[in-house]
Image 1 (cartoon, rainbow, N blue to C red):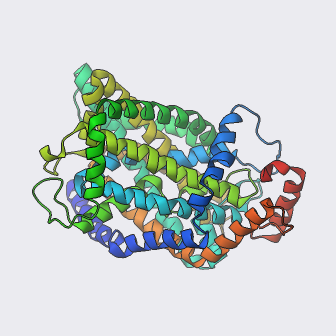
Image 2: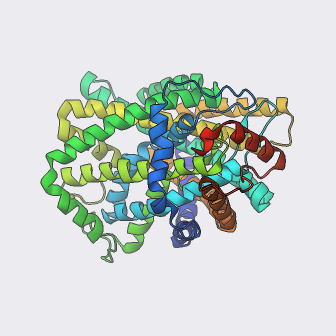
Length: 506
Protein backbone atom coordinates (compact mmCIF):
# COMPACT_ATOMS: atom_id res chain seq x y z
CA UNK A 1 0.00 0.00 0.00
CA UNK A 2 2.75 2.45 1.02
CA UNK A 3 4.90 1.57 -1.99
CA UNK A 4 1.93 2.01 -4.34
CA UNK A 5 1.18 5.39 -2.78
CA UNK A 6 4.79 6.51 -3.29
CA UNK A 7 4.63 5.40 -6.93
CA UNK A 8 1.53 7.54 -7.48
CA UNK A 9 3.23 10.49 -5.79
CA UNK A 10 6.30 10.01 -7.99
CA UNK A 11 4.15 9.95 -11.13
CA UNK A 12 2.25 13.14 -10.25
CA UNK A 13 5.39 14.93 -9.12
CA UNK A 14 7.24 13.99 -12.30
CA UNK A 15 4.52 15.62 -14.40
CA UNK A 16 4.36 18.80 -12.27
CA UNK A 17 8.15 19.03 -12.12
CA UNK A 18 8.40 18.91 -15.91
CA UNK A 19 6.13 21.96 -16.04
CA UNK A 20 7.70 23.84 -13.14
CA UNK A 21 11.27 23.39 -14.38
CA UNK A 22 10.48 23.71 -18.06
CA UNK A 23 12.09 26.31 -20.30
CA UNK A 24 9.46 29.03 -19.50
CA UNK A 25 10.48 29.06 -15.83
CA UNK A 26 14.18 28.92 -16.71
CA UNK A 27 13.62 31.94 -18.96
CA UNK A 28 11.71 33.67 -16.13
CA UNK A 29 14.60 33.09 -13.70
CA UNK A 30 17.20 34.37 -16.15
CA UNK A 31 14.98 37.18 -17.38
CA UNK A 32 14.27 38.42 -13.86
CA UNK A 33 17.96 38.44 -13.01
CA UNK A 34 18.84 40.27 -16.21
CA UNK A 35 16.08 42.87 -15.67
CA UNK A 36 17.17 43.55 -12.08
CA UNK A 37 20.81 43.69 -13.15
CA UNK A 38 20.03 46.33 -15.76
CA UNK A 39 17.76 48.35 -13.45
CA UNK A 40 20.44 48.43 -10.72
CA UNK A 41 23.19 49.21 -13.26
CA UNK A 42 25.05 45.90 -12.77
CA UNK A 43 25.18 46.31 -9.01
CA UNK A 44 26.84 42.90 -8.51
CA UNK A 45 29.84 44.16 -10.48
CA UNK A 46 30.00 47.83 -9.50
CA UNK A 47 29.43 47.29 -5.79
CA UNK A 48 30.91 43.83 -5.28
CA UNK A 49 33.90 45.28 -3.41
CA UNK A 50 31.55 47.24 -1.21
CA UNK A 51 29.48 44.12 -0.55
CA UNK A 52 32.63 42.61 0.95
CA UNK A 53 33.74 45.74 2.80
CA UNK A 54 30.34 46.38 4.38
CA UNK A 55 29.34 42.80 5.10
CA UNK A 56 31.60 39.85 5.72
CA UNK A 57 34.82 41.73 6.54
CA UNK A 58 33.44 43.95 9.35
CA UNK A 59 31.24 41.07 10.55
CA UNK A 60 34.26 38.82 11.03
CA UNK A 61 36.07 41.64 12.84
CA UNK A 62 33.11 42.11 15.17
CA UNK A 63 32.65 38.45 16.11
CA UNK A 64 32.29 38.13 19.85
CA UNK A 65 31.16 41.71 20.37
CA UNK A 66 27.87 42.33 22.08
CA UNK A 67 24.85 42.87 19.92
CA UNK A 68 22.82 46.07 19.86
CA UNK A 69 21.19 46.96 23.19
CA UNK A 70 17.95 47.92 21.46
CA UNK A 71 15.24 45.92 23.22
CA UNK A 72 12.37 47.11 21.02
CA UNK A 73 13.18 44.56 18.35
CA UNK A 74 13.72 40.84 18.80
CA UNK A 75 16.28 40.64 16.03
CA UNK A 76 19.61 39.02 15.26
CA UNK A 77 22.90 40.55 14.16
CA UNK A 78 23.64 40.98 10.47
CA UNK A 79 26.16 38.13 10.62
CA UNK A 80 23.70 35.82 12.42
CA UNK A 81 21.04 36.63 9.83
CA UNK A 82 23.58 35.93 7.07
CA UNK A 83 24.73 32.70 8.76
CA UNK A 84 21.14 31.49 9.02
CA UNK A 85 20.52 32.38 5.38
CA UNK A 86 23.78 30.82 4.15
CA UNK A 87 23.12 27.71 6.24
CA UNK A 88 19.83 27.39 4.41
CA UNK A 89 21.59 27.62 1.06
CA UNK A 90 24.84 25.75 1.76
CA UNK A 91 23.59 22.18 2.06
CA UNK A 92 23.72 18.89 0.24
CA UNK A 93 22.95 20.79 -2.96
CA UNK A 94 26.47 22.22 -2.88
CA UNK A 95 28.08 18.77 -2.97
CA UNK A 96 25.63 16.06 -4.00
CA UNK A 97 23.49 18.51 -5.99
CA UNK A 98 26.43 19.70 -8.07
CA UNK A 99 27.55 16.16 -8.81
CA UNK A 100 23.95 15.25 -9.64
CA UNK A 101 23.84 18.15 -12.12
CA UNK A 102 27.02 16.89 -13.78
CA UNK A 103 25.82 13.29 -13.92
CA UNK A 104 22.36 14.16 -15.29
CA UNK A 105 23.19 17.23 -17.38
CA UNK A 106 26.88 16.92 -18.12
CA UNK A 107 29.72 19.23 -17.04
CA UNK A 108 28.19 22.06 -19.08
CA UNK A 109 25.51 22.32 -16.36
CA UNK A 110 28.15 23.94 -14.14
CA UNK A 111 28.41 26.84 -16.60
CA UNK A 112 24.65 27.46 -16.27
CA UNK A 113 24.96 27.31 -12.50
CA UNK A 114 27.45 30.16 -12.81
CA UNK A 115 25.14 32.10 -15.11
CA UNK A 116 22.22 31.67 -12.72
CA UNK A 117 24.48 32.79 -9.85
CA UNK A 118 25.81 35.89 -11.64
CA UNK A 119 22.32 37.25 -12.17
CA UNK A 120 21.12 35.57 -9.00
CA UNK A 121 23.37 37.85 -6.93
CA UNK A 122 21.14 40.78 -7.89
CA UNK A 123 17.99 38.69 -7.58
CA UNK A 124 18.94 37.77 -4.02
CA UNK A 125 19.94 41.36 -3.33
CA UNK A 126 16.53 42.56 -4.52
CA UNK A 127 14.73 39.99 -2.39
CA UNK A 128 16.56 41.22 0.71
CA UNK A 129 15.89 44.87 -0.10
CA UNK A 130 12.17 44.25 -0.53
CA UNK A 131 12.11 41.87 2.43
CA UNK A 132 13.43 44.51 4.83
CA UNK A 133 11.40 47.30 3.23
CA UNK A 134 8.09 45.43 3.65
CA UNK A 135 8.85 43.46 6.84
CA UNK A 136 6.45 43.68 9.76
CA UNK A 137 6.90 43.77 13.53
CA UNK A 138 4.56 41.98 15.91
CA UNK A 139 3.56 43.00 19.41
CA UNK A 140 6.51 41.11 20.90
CA UNK A 141 9.00 42.98 18.72
CA UNK A 142 9.71 40.08 16.34
CA UNK A 143 10.52 41.16 12.79
CA UNK A 144 8.99 39.06 10.02
CA UNK A 145 9.56 39.33 6.30
CA UNK A 146 9.73 37.29 3.15
CA UNK A 147 8.40 37.07 -0.37
CA UNK A 148 4.82 36.65 0.86
CA UNK A 149 5.07 39.99 2.70
CA UNK A 150 6.23 42.01 -0.28
CA UNK A 151 3.83 40.21 -2.59
CA UNK A 152 0.94 41.07 -0.26
CA UNK A 153 1.97 44.62 0.69
CA UNK A 154 4.02 45.66 -2.34
CA UNK A 155 2.34 43.97 -5.26
CA UNK A 156 -0.90 43.85 -3.22
CA UNK A 157 -1.85 40.42 -4.57
CA UNK A 158 -2.69 38.72 -1.28
CA UNK A 159 -3.99 35.60 -2.98
CA UNK A 160 -0.60 35.09 -4.63
CA UNK A 161 1.15 35.78 -1.33
CA UNK A 162 -0.80 32.95 0.30
CA UNK A 163 0.20 30.58 -2.49
CA UNK A 164 3.82 31.64 -1.98
CA UNK A 165 3.60 30.97 1.76
CA UNK A 166 1.94 27.56 1.26
CA UNK A 167 4.60 26.52 -1.25
CA UNK A 168 7.24 27.69 1.24
CA UNK A 169 5.81 25.42 3.95
CA UNK A 170 5.96 22.37 1.68
CA UNK A 171 9.39 23.37 0.36
CA UNK A 172 10.65 23.62 3.95
CA UNK A 173 9.35 20.14 4.78
CA UNK A 174 10.82 18.79 1.55
CA UNK A 175 14.16 20.49 2.13
CA UNK A 176 14.47 18.97 5.60
CA UNK A 177 13.62 15.59 4.09
CA UNK A 178 16.35 15.88 1.46
CA UNK A 179 18.97 16.86 4.00
CA UNK A 180 18.03 14.22 6.61
CA UNK A 181 17.89 11.55 3.94
CA UNK A 182 21.45 12.32 2.90
CA UNK A 183 22.66 12.50 6.51
CA UNK A 184 21.21 9.08 7.36
CA UNK A 185 22.45 7.56 4.11
CA UNK A 186 25.98 8.89 4.63
CA UNK A 187 26.32 7.94 8.30
CA UNK A 188 24.85 4.44 7.91
CA UNK A 189 27.16 3.80 4.94
CA UNK A 190 30.23 4.91 6.90
CA UNK A 191 29.08 2.92 9.93
CA UNK A 192 28.63 -0.15 7.74
CA UNK A 193 32.10 0.24 6.25
CA UNK A 194 33.97 0.76 9.51
CA UNK A 195 31.78 -0.89 12.18
CA UNK A 196 30.16 -3.62 10.06
CA UNK A 197 26.66 -2.44 11.01
CA UNK A 198 23.87 -3.19 8.49
CA UNK A 199 22.58 -0.44 6.19
CA UNK A 200 18.92 -0.99 6.99
CA UNK A 201 15.87 1.25 7.10
CA UNK A 202 15.87 0.83 10.87
CA UNK A 203 19.46 2.10 11.07
CA UNK A 204 18.58 5.11 8.93
CA UNK A 205 15.56 5.79 11.13
CA UNK A 206 17.75 5.77 14.25
CA UNK A 207 19.95 8.45 12.66
CA UNK A 208 16.84 10.40 11.67
CA UNK A 209 15.51 10.33 15.23
CA UNK A 210 18.86 11.57 16.55
CA UNK A 211 18.92 14.44 14.02
CA UNK A 212 15.32 15.29 14.88
CA UNK A 213 16.10 15.38 18.62
CA UNK A 214 19.07 17.73 18.23
CA UNK A 215 17.13 19.88 15.76
CA UNK A 216 14.23 20.18 18.20
CA UNK A 217 16.41 21.77 20.87
CA UNK A 218 17.55 24.46 18.42
CA UNK A 219 14.29 24.98 16.51
CA UNK A 220 12.22 25.55 19.66
CA UNK A 221 14.62 28.36 20.61
CA UNK A 222 13.58 30.41 17.58
CA UNK A 223 15.63 32.64 15.29
CA UNK A 224 17.94 33.88 18.09
CA UNK A 225 19.11 30.34 18.89
CA UNK A 226 19.20 29.33 15.22
CA UNK A 227 21.32 32.40 14.45
CA UNK A 228 23.79 31.63 17.23
CA UNK A 229 24.19 27.97 16.22
CA UNK A 230 24.59 28.66 12.52
CA UNK A 231 27.05 31.52 13.11
CA UNK A 232 29.29 28.99 14.88
CA UNK A 233 28.86 26.04 12.49
CA UNK A 234 28.86 27.79 9.09
CA UNK A 235 32.43 29.19 9.25
CA UNK A 236 33.84 25.89 10.54
CA UNK A 237 32.17 23.57 8.02
CA UNK A 238 32.81 25.91 5.10
CA UNK A 239 36.48 26.34 5.93
CA UNK A 240 36.99 22.59 6.35
CA UNK A 241 35.39 21.89 2.97
CA UNK A 242 37.31 24.66 1.19
CA UNK A 243 40.68 23.46 2.53
CA UNK A 244 40.08 19.83 1.55
CA UNK A 245 38.74 20.79 -1.89
CA UNK A 246 41.74 23.02 -2.62
CA UNK A 247 44.15 20.25 -1.59
CA UNK A 248 42.33 17.73 -3.80
CA UNK A 249 42.26 20.07 -6.79
CA UNK A 250 45.89 21.01 -6.22
CA UNK A 251 46.92 17.37 -6.26
CA UNK A 252 45.36 17.09 -9.74
CA UNK A 253 46.39 20.54 -10.96
CA UNK A 254 47.33 19.24 -14.40
CA UNK A 255 43.67 18.26 -14.95
CA UNK A 256 42.31 21.75 -14.16
CA UNK A 257 42.49 23.10 -17.76
CA UNK A 258 40.68 19.99 -19.04
CA UNK A 259 37.98 20.44 -16.39
CA UNK A 260 37.30 24.03 -17.44
CA UNK A 261 37.37 22.94 -21.10
CA UNK A 262 34.65 20.40 -20.36
CA UNK A 263 32.51 22.95 -18.51
CA UNK A 264 32.67 25.57 -21.25
CA UNK A 265 32.79 23.12 -24.14
CA UNK A 266 29.64 21.28 -23.04
CA UNK A 267 27.67 24.38 -21.97
CA UNK A 268 26.01 24.66 -25.39
CA UNK A 269 25.97 20.96 -26.13
CA UNK A 270 23.50 19.98 -28.87
CA UNK A 271 24.64 16.35 -28.95
CA UNK A 272 21.79 13.86 -28.58
CA UNK A 273 21.44 12.04 -25.28
CA UNK A 274 23.05 8.62 -24.98
CA UNK A 275 26.55 7.24 -25.00
CA UNK A 276 27.55 8.37 -21.55
CA UNK A 277 27.36 11.38 -19.28
CA UNK A 278 28.77 13.68 -21.95
CA UNK A 279 25.88 13.06 -24.31
CA UNK A 280 23.05 15.28 -23.08
CA UNK A 281 20.83 17.65 -25.00
CA UNK A 282 21.12 21.40 -24.60
CA UNK A 283 17.76 21.52 -22.81
CA UNK A 284 18.99 19.03 -20.22
CA UNK A 285 22.24 20.90 -19.74
CA UNK A 286 20.63 24.27 -19.10
CA UNK A 287 17.65 23.07 -17.03
CA UNK A 288 19.76 20.83 -14.80
CA UNK A 289 22.30 23.59 -14.30
CA UNK A 290 19.68 26.23 -13.56
CA UNK A 291 17.57 23.97 -11.34
CA UNK A 292 20.54 22.83 -9.26
CA UNK A 293 21.90 26.38 -9.16
CA UNK A 294 18.64 27.74 -7.76
CA UNK A 295 18.33 24.73 -5.42
CA UNK A 296 21.78 25.54 -4.09
CA UNK A 297 21.90 29.35 -3.82
CA UNK A 298 18.11 29.87 -3.55
CA UNK A 299 18.28 33.11 -5.56
CA UNK A 300 14.75 33.61 -6.85
CA UNK A 301 13.03 31.35 -4.34
CA UNK A 302 12.36 34.11 -1.82
CA UNK A 303 13.50 31.86 1.04
CA UNK A 304 16.75 33.24 2.47
CA UNK A 305 15.18 36.71 2.65
CA UNK A 306 13.06 35.37 5.53
CA UNK A 307 16.21 35.06 7.64
CA UNK A 308 17.67 38.36 6.43
CA UNK A 309 14.45 40.17 7.37
CA UNK A 310 15.11 39.37 11.04
CA UNK A 311 18.35 41.39 10.95
CA UNK A 312 18.82 44.35 13.28
CA UNK A 313 19.96 46.60 10.41
CA UNK A 314 17.62 49.43 9.41
CA UNK A 315 19.02 49.84 5.89
CA UNK A 316 17.45 47.48 3.32
CA UNK A 317 20.36 47.97 0.92
CA UNK A 318 22.97 47.05 3.52
CA UNK A 319 21.29 43.72 4.13
CA UNK A 320 20.78 43.38 0.39
CA UNK A 321 24.54 43.49 -0.10
CA UNK A 322 24.78 40.42 2.13
CA UNK A 323 22.67 38.67 -0.49
CA UNK A 324 25.24 39.48 -3.18
CA UNK A 325 28.01 37.88 -1.15
CA UNK A 326 25.78 34.98 -0.11
CA UNK A 327 25.17 33.79 -3.69
CA UNK A 328 28.80 34.41 -4.64
CA UNK A 329 30.03 32.33 -1.72
CA UNK A 330 27.50 29.56 -2.25
CA UNK A 331 27.92 29.03 -5.99
CA UNK A 332 31.14 30.62 -7.21
CA UNK A 333 33.14 29.26 -4.28
CA UNK A 334 31.54 26.16 -2.74
CA UNK A 335 29.78 24.74 -5.82
CA UNK A 336 32.73 25.53 -8.10
CA UNK A 337 35.15 23.79 -5.74
CA UNK A 338 32.87 20.74 -5.72
CA UNK A 339 32.69 20.67 -9.52
CA UNK A 340 36.45 21.07 -9.98
CA UNK A 341 37.24 18.46 -7.34
CA UNK A 342 34.92 15.98 -9.06
CA UNK A 343 36.06 16.74 -12.62
CA UNK A 344 39.78 16.65 -11.77
CA UNK A 345 39.43 13.43 -9.76
CA UNK A 346 37.41 11.29 -12.18
CA UNK A 347 37.39 10.64 -15.91
CA UNK A 348 33.80 11.18 -17.08
CA UNK A 349 34.36 8.96 -20.10
CA UNK A 350 34.12 6.03 -17.68
CA UNK A 351 30.62 7.08 -16.57
CA UNK A 352 27.36 6.00 -18.18
CA UNK A 353 25.04 8.57 -16.57
CA UNK A 354 23.39 6.05 -14.22
CA UNK A 355 25.72 6.47 -11.27
CA UNK A 356 24.36 7.47 -7.84
CA UNK A 357 25.30 11.03 -6.91
CA UNK A 358 25.65 10.36 -3.16
CA UNK A 359 28.02 7.44 -3.78
CA UNK A 360 30.30 9.48 -6.01
CA UNK A 361 30.22 12.42 -3.63
CA UNK A 362 31.79 10.25 -0.96
CA UNK A 363 34.07 8.58 -3.49
CA UNK A 364 35.41 12.01 -4.44
CA UNK A 365 36.72 12.44 -0.90
CA UNK A 366 37.87 8.85 -0.34
CA UNK A 367 39.69 8.83 -3.69
CA UNK A 368 41.73 11.86 -2.67
CA UNK A 369 42.19 11.30 1.07
CA UNK A 370 41.49 7.63 1.74
CA UNK A 371 39.86 6.83 5.08
CA UNK A 372 40.49 10.38 6.28
CA UNK A 373 38.46 11.64 3.32
CA UNK A 374 35.58 9.29 4.08
CA UNK A 375 35.50 10.41 7.70
CA UNK A 376 35.79 14.08 6.69
CA UNK A 377 32.89 13.68 4.27
CA UNK A 378 30.82 12.06 7.02
CA UNK A 379 31.41 15.23 9.07
CA UNK A 380 31.08 17.89 6.36
CA UNK A 381 27.91 16.64 4.66
CA UNK A 382 25.89 16.16 7.86
CA UNK A 383 26.92 19.63 9.06
CA UNK A 384 25.93 21.19 5.73
CA UNK A 385 22.64 19.32 5.83
CA UNK A 386 21.90 19.94 9.52
CA UNK A 387 22.27 23.71 9.33
CA UNK A 388 19.96 23.70 6.30
CA UNK A 389 17.35 21.77 8.27
CA UNK A 390 17.23 24.27 11.13
CA UNK A 391 17.25 27.29 8.80
CA UNK A 392 14.31 25.98 6.75
CA UNK A 393 12.35 25.25 9.93
CA UNK A 394 12.35 28.99 10.53
CA UNK A 395 11.28 29.69 6.94
CA UNK A 396 8.36 27.30 7.29
CA UNK A 397 7.41 28.76 10.66
CA UNK A 398 7.26 32.30 9.25
CA UNK A 399 5.21 31.10 6.29
CA UNK A 400 2.74 29.48 8.70
CA UNK A 401 2.55 32.71 10.72
CA UNK A 402 1.74 34.63 7.55
CA UNK A 403 -0.97 32.18 6.50
CA UNK A 404 -2.66 32.48 9.91
CA UNK A 405 -2.08 36.20 10.35
CA UNK A 406 -5.79 36.67 10.94
CA UNK A 407 -5.65 34.56 14.11
CA UNK A 408 -4.89 35.90 17.55
CA UNK A 409 -1.42 35.74 19.08
CA UNK A 410 -2.29 32.71 21.22
CA UNK A 411 -3.79 30.84 18.27
CA UNK A 412 -0.77 31.61 16.07
CA UNK A 413 1.56 30.43 18.83
CA UNK A 414 -0.30 27.10 19.04
CA UNK A 415 -0.33 26.69 15.25
CA UNK A 416 3.41 27.41 14.87
CA UNK A 417 4.15 25.01 17.73
CA UNK A 418 2.17 22.31 15.95
CA UNK A 419 4.14 23.02 12.76
CA UNK A 420 7.43 22.69 14.63
CA UNK A 421 6.36 19.35 16.08
CA UNK A 422 5.24 18.05 12.67
CA UNK A 423 8.45 19.35 11.07
CA UNK A 424 10.60 17.58 13.68
CA UNK A 425 8.68 14.30 13.33
CA UNK A 426 8.99 14.41 9.53
CA UNK A 427 12.75 14.88 9.86
CA UNK A 428 12.90 11.34 11.22
CA UNK A 429 10.24 9.87 8.91
CA UNK A 430 11.91 11.19 5.75
CA UNK A 431 14.80 8.77 6.21
CA UNK A 432 12.48 5.93 5.16
CA UNK A 433 11.56 7.48 1.80
CA UNK A 434 13.55 6.88 -1.37
CA UNK A 435 16.09 9.69 -1.65
CA UNK A 436 15.52 10.36 -5.36
CA UNK A 437 11.79 10.85 -4.81
CA UNK A 438 12.10 13.22 -1.88
CA UNK A 439 14.72 15.24 -3.78
CA UNK A 440 12.39 15.47 -6.80
CA UNK A 441 9.43 16.54 -4.65
CA UNK A 442 11.41 19.33 -3.01
CA UNK A 443 12.71 20.37 -6.43
CA UNK A 444 9.09 20.81 -7.52
CA UNK A 445 8.08 22.90 -4.51
CA UNK A 446 11.19 25.05 -4.91
CA UNK A 447 10.06 25.83 -8.43
CA UNK A 448 6.48 26.51 -7.32
CA UNK A 449 7.79 28.80 -4.58
CA UNK A 450 9.96 30.68 -7.07
CA UNK A 451 7.23 31.55 -9.60
CA UNK A 452 5.16 34.03 -7.50
CA UNK A 453 8.36 35.52 -6.08
CA UNK A 454 9.84 36.13 -9.54
CA UNK A 455 6.61 37.68 -10.81
CA UNK A 456 6.69 40.11 -7.88
CA UNK A 457 10.38 40.93 -8.36
CA UNK A 458 9.69 41.91 -11.97
CA UNK A 459 6.72 44.07 -10.95
CA UNK A 460 8.65 45.79 -8.13
CA UNK A 461 11.97 46.10 -9.95
CA UNK A 462 11.48 49.86 -10.22
CA UNK A 463 11.06 50.15 -6.45
CA UNK A 464 14.26 48.15 -5.90
CA UNK A 465 16.07 50.58 -8.20
CA UNK A 466 14.69 53.61 -6.30
CA UNK A 467 15.63 52.22 -2.86
CA UNK A 468 19.11 51.40 -4.16
CA UNK A 469 19.62 54.85 -5.65
CA UNK A 470 18.31 56.48 -2.48
CA UNK A 471 20.85 54.64 -0.34
CA UNK A 472 23.91 55.33 -2.48
CA UNK A 473 22.88 58.97 -3.06
CA UNK A 474 22.69 59.44 0.71
CA UNK A 475 26.09 57.81 1.09
CA UNK A 476 27.44 60.39 -1.34
CA UNK A 477 26.10 63.16 0.90
CA UNK A 478 22.77 64.03 -0.70
CA UNK A 479 20.06 65.12 1.74
CA UNK A 480 17.21 62.78 0.95
CA UNK A 481 14.37 61.16 2.88
CA UNK A 482 15.64 57.63 3.68
CA UNK A 483 13.66 54.74 2.20
CA UNK A 484 13.87 52.32 5.13
CA UNK A 485 10.35 50.94 5.42
CA UNK A 486 7.14 50.93 3.42
CA UNK A 487 5.25 51.89 6.58
CA UNK A 488 5.49 55.57 7.67
CA UNK A 489 5.68 54.84 11.42
CA UNK A 490 8.50 52.31 11.05
CA UNK A 491 10.29 54.53 8.53
CA UNK A 492 10.29 57.42 11.02
CA UNK A 493 11.45 55.17 13.83
CA UNK A 494 14.27 53.67 11.77
CA UNK A 495 15.26 57.14 10.56
CA UNK A 496 15.68 58.29 14.17
CA UNK A 497 17.76 55.20 14.83
CA UNK A 498 20.03 56.09 11.92
CA UNK A 499 20.50 59.61 13.24
CA UNK A 500 21.57 58.24 16.62
CA UNK A 501 23.78 55.55 15.11
CA UNK A 502 25.92 56.76 12.21
CA UNK A 503 27.44 53.30 11.87
CA UNK A 504 24.54 52.25 9.64
CA UNK A 505 25.88 54.49 6.92
CA UNK A 506 29.57 53.87 7.48
